Image (cartoon, rainbow, N blue to C red; front, side, top):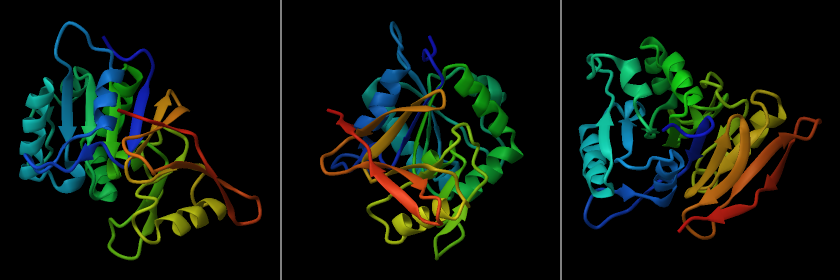
Length: 243
């Protein structure tokens, strides 16, 4: 059964440090899988590491985690050719698509080259839960800030725009993210939007933000909008701590 509404959980988290694996699935990603509402079978979760150049170690660790979580894991790779015969059919058959971080500019270019911009919109509208971290968060929005082009941070404005907002990731942990994001919203380069500290996520149903979530204490999420005079106003959102 698909989710009961188009659903995105956009995060600056979803994985945690591990003593057994390179990383383990975190509460935010587990919650994304719960949102799919699967019962009577194992959830189908497809991992996209496009933004990380489809790093084999990342993909291997995902499969280790999927086995531990009881998921039916798969991954979609696009180089040097897609690893599945029918990309559209594969993605539409998933319960959750989980997108890893890295170069959001590279991700968007590669996705558009292979038609994933259209396919993922169809999947979202059909109830496949979309989630991801960093580049895997910005991609669902209009745009955000990125180091895809190397330092300094720059705007990216050609996201998939499933969500009509901008998105700031790593808001508390990477110097320069917060002031640049506010400046870009203030001067109109980016529309009003939402930002997440590391360990926080934004849950959207359709194009409405319904909840801000965290997987650890002391982190937040924020609404950023223009003040009408070239500056920006930041408002902290209420957050719910996941177990």
